[in-house]
Length: 169
View 1 (spheres, rainbow, N blue to C red):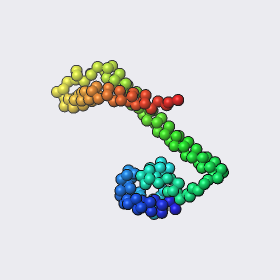
View 2 (view 1 turned 60 degrees about the vertical axis):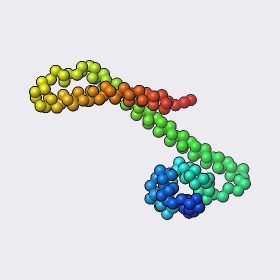
View 3 (view 1 turned 180 degrees about the vertical axis):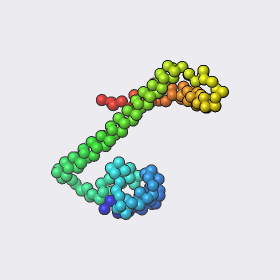
């Protein structure tokens, strides 16, 4: 039922599979698989499809909503509650993953800064007549030069990201 609904509504809106795919940020083959019934879109994608096709999700799923009874309203509200809970959990998990990644990045940057301060550029005293020392010294110096210029920016952006991903109560 879903596959026929996506196809018929897409055609009634005058969209090709390619055009719909572009609007949904997927490849055309994904639309084709949905319309052939080889796969189904997840709940977030169903919402995106309904927005692009300007059609309620219930219509895409083939449900006819006619004056719902009290029991139907209760069942629908329970389903919506479960869907909202799942979406909320997915969003929180993604936020936590981003936050911990940014915290790890800040920690690594601080550790490298401390290491560079403690080492005090020992390669500057090396004998550069030896080709291996010369290449290694240039590599260390290049890393240090780039790191000192780029790391503060990354650190500031990461701290801002940590603050922005902080859970709001």
